[in-house]
Structures are given as structure tokens and as C-alpha cells.
Amino acid sequence: MSQSPSTVAAEMYNESKISKRKKQEGSFLVGMLPLLSLFAIGVILYGVTASGMQGISRYWEIFVALIALFSLGSGWGQAYLGNRSRLWYLIRQIVHWGGLILLLYVLNTQGIRMLMNDHQYTILLAYLLSFAVLLAAVHVDFKLIFFGVFMTYCAFLIAVPTNNPALVALGKQLDIPNATAQPLLMTLGVAGAGLIASLFIRAYMRGAIAAKRSR
Image (cartoon, rainbow, N blue to C red):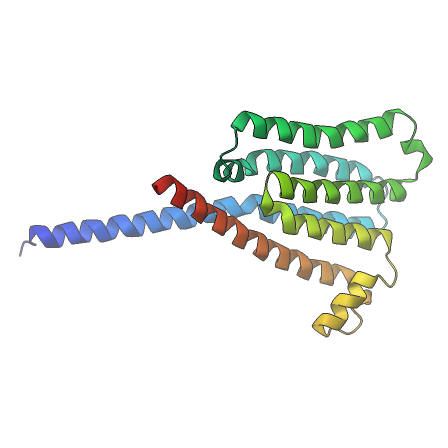
């Protein structure tokens, strides 16, 4: 028995909606991978740094470049929402991350790096990176705000590995006994919370971009 034209049209419309929803869900999942990777690498770097691995600072330097690349590609949406020039956005990103990379170059070529051991230099790298991410979140890509907070937390843990006040405060707040004795587990929890919060911001910005484009 053949279907009526209205029924066929309704089925085609429903299939189109389902297909569009699946594409949006797939796009969201693919889009969250870079943020997930940043938090995962941050946890790994903290873990191996806390374990006392020698030569870890070179991996932190590589991480600086990775975050710079992520920020460069991730902040276009915020620039669009703010009606900012793409050229001006690109210039700001280059100045921001280029300045940090130039500073690291100066530290390594002017003898300053030699005044510090690997652990001290790693602490400096972690703090510089966390502050750079927080500034980038304010100026070019707000999605990075919770990642910046997470990196500041990691830098503080690396700098103060024993009886860290941040772990003490989190332990009291979440009613976790001996929080200072399990810093890696606590760091995983903080990273998870930061990732979820970052994804909420990302979803909000995607909605705002879609609404602006539909006007």
C-alpha cells in the first residue's frame, strides 16, 4: 500500500532532523577532543614531574607550543561573536604566544636557564604557562579559563609538593581524608571538573554563534 505524499514528506523531514542531530553530536564529540587532550596531557605532565623525572622541562616547552596552536585555532569563534577583525585576532595571538616563546628562548640562550636546576625551571615553566593561558582566556578564548585555573593548580602542586594548601582546602571542602597523600587522584578530579566546565562554555559559545548566524 503506497504512502500519501504528506506521510512521505513527514518521514523525510524526520530523517533529515535525525541526520542533522547526529552530525551535530558527532561535531561536538570531535570538537571536545582537543580540550580533552590538553587536560589529559596536563595530568600526565604533572604526574611525571611529581615523580621526579629528569629532563621533564623539555616536554613542558613542547606543551607550550601545543597550547599556543590550540589557542590559535580555538579562539576564532569568540572573535566572531565580538565582531573583531580576523587579522587583529591573529596579530594578538601571535604577540601573546610569540612573546612567551621568545621569553623562553631568552632564558635558554642568555645563561639564565643554567642558574636553575631542571625542577626549578619546570616550576617556572608551569607558572608562566598557566598565567599565559589565563590571559589568553580573558583576551582571545574564554574556553581556556578553566584550563588556565587547572594549570595554575598543577604549577602550585609542583612548587609545593608537601602539605600543599590547595590539596588541604579541597580535602576539607569535599570531605576527602588524606587528600594531601593522593595528589594525582585529586589532580584527576580537578581536571575532570575543569573539562566539564570548559565543555559547557564551549557549548554555550557554539549556541551563541549559531544564533548570530541565523539572524
